[in-house]
Length: 585
Image (cartoon, rainbow, N blue to C red; front, side, top):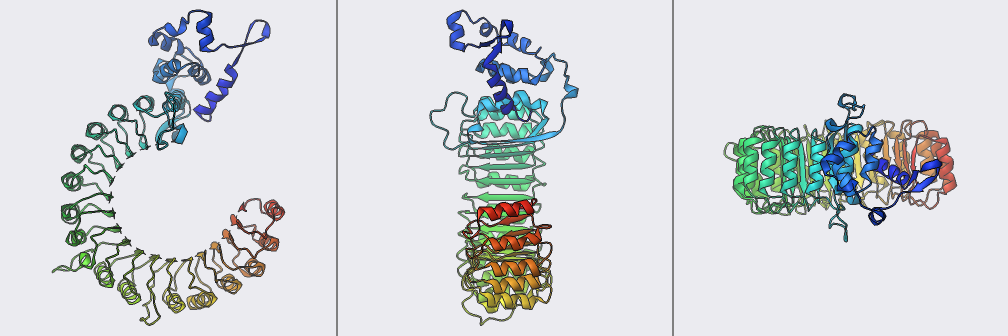
């Protein structure tokens, strides 16, 4: 069987007709017709008797067929263990490969889970299950059309080898279903729960005690959980490495601190849309030395002094602060001994409007091992502050990403130092960056391999040509994204074709490119270009596709959507020649 539902539908269609005497096909009556014609003795049997009868069914197809007869038969089949079957196929002959399943929207219901419980053992061992129900639940849904404790109980009993379970928007699942999960799936390693208002501390307490191998725990929008369950996890979940807590208003600081101080294997912590105090971040800095990655998003209640504690965790390698109101320049100030952010390698600061040049420079001065910097929507950072901050980590920086940072008002700032190991640079919607800055970045980043200049209206051919010239004759650039740069034309494309011979991915979506530029790319450009996007390039025609046929050996992906000058006939012809290329158009 490819899938239980497909098998059941196929059997269901064939069940509408059955063979009668003399080889004639006789229509099977409905349940109502059966009751009208006489007593329904089979459905009056106890479930134990039905289970005994079903145990003699020889094939999985027969089990699926019987499960379609009524809800009662589906329930009996779903609750049966394989050890109760008396068919010739024994448990040792079942497939042992690990498989995963995902149920979305209308598929996320009790009936589907019950059918899965029947057929899944014949396909493999279910170890990963993700269920994303519709929100709000579908209106006028009949019984069994929603996912409840019954469905979770059935699948937990049938698939006791589950290692990963995701439940999103399963609003009708409560503590009873979670209890079955904790009792049956003791090998569970990853558990993700989102928008589950019916689950309380009592249910999660059972998970903490019954699933000792849990290494990943994610809770989002669970308004009924408080502190007791976290204290239980702090006591029993010694293998927990990843913990994400978002939008759980009843959880207080003390419970989070217990997790930080007791779980020595914890490596990644994320807190989002929560109100916490300085004491939590003090615990991160002073006691949770095992934590390597910290994400704080839309956190309320922490003062600028509270954020100072983060830097005392010398083992912290990755820090992300998003929309945190309390973050200011003082949050990154040096202490008396100066030993802060010693191990920090990756930092991302987004939508922290109070941060200025002083705080950014202080952070980069302290974190001497920074390899990756991401800045987004920071209005108070100037060009001089950015250049000084980058200079502090020029020898270690490998990735730089700026999104919606309108920093550069003029080119009257000092030249950046050389970045000998910088491999990736992205400027996305950063209006006001002068082309002089781009040219100087080309001089400073000679080893760059991935470049993104996305929706940069200030970038023209002059900036691109100067940037490529500074990079040298034959660059190591393998990925170039110029999507949305409306003033980039064929001149830039020819320079790219001539100087970027190692290029593998090129995105020119929305650029002012014509057939001439594409012909230059095909004739003079890299021989092993794998992905090309020309989406929204209104000036190109069928001639461009003809020229690109020379790249058929290497080209794997081509996007020509929103190109009115390209006909469907030309796309069909291109697909025939370049049969291994995925063409969108």
